[in-house]
Length: 114
Length: 115
Image (cartoon, rainbow over all chains, first blue to last red; front, side):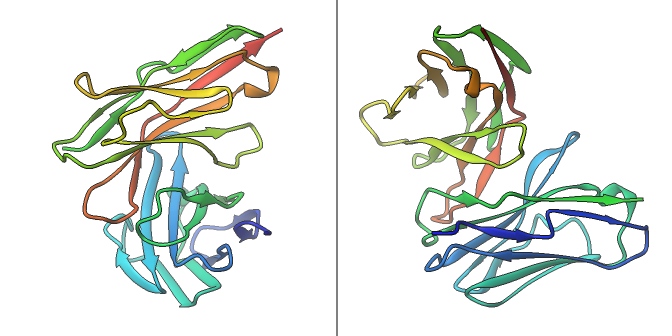
């Protein structure tokens, strides 16, 4: 299995630009999670999906952030407009189903907003 | 409130020695799960071990074991026979209640293994 795939691995953009992060979960996994990791706040869950449906988006910091999962094999996290404080590593993770305890993380996308 | 606390920002250990990384948690739910993840310098998050709140025995996975003391609300990770490749950040996490696989993470402990 290829594992969770994220793209791009690194993204540098200017403040005000739109940023789209992509994730392909492990084939057959029904739950998908987006996390953000910063030095100040550590690892935070932003949103998670089950069977392509958003279950809890209470961790999404503000309206500039949006996430979609149009099908079982693809999800996006979009920031529009981006700000320097959005600089972080964004992880996508998947698990077999909503009750499975093991989450498999992707390699992360390191976002830098200048 | 549900919370994970890792009080050791950094630890070091000699190669081949054992080391314990501390984790305490706070929850009022009777059913929960506790996890440890490893994050090497390359950045990926690697699942190490899981302990369910109703599990009678401490979880073990190879050189990793979880010292689960329910009454003290602690879930310490023990790494035996440390290797240089064990140098990394280690995160303790708790699965929240409600049947959903939602995790909250501690701040992490950076482990350095010295030759």
